[in-house]
Image (cartoon, rainbow, N blue to C red; front, side, top):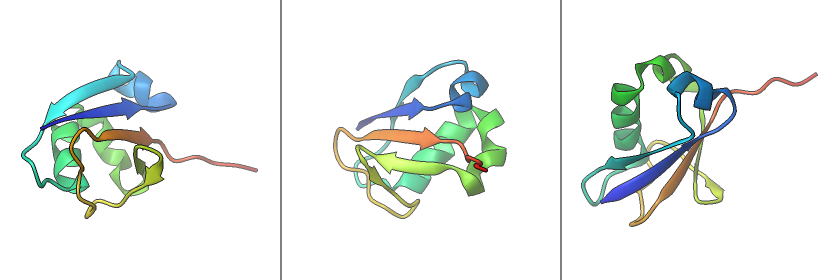
Length: 81
């Protein structure tokens, strides 16, 4: 199945794009998609432990199942003061 991934904030600069599509087998979980993302964009891998993930409008974890037609957003870590 095809999964769309959007890169937000400086992740768009790191990847050189705001969005990309990935082919994953049906029944895949977010962590499997992330492996494909980091393989294509290895410069994102150092941020893995602090990346926020959302499927559509809901936050997600690496163990969550990817639904058909999923749109996944990856957000970099943020700091505030």
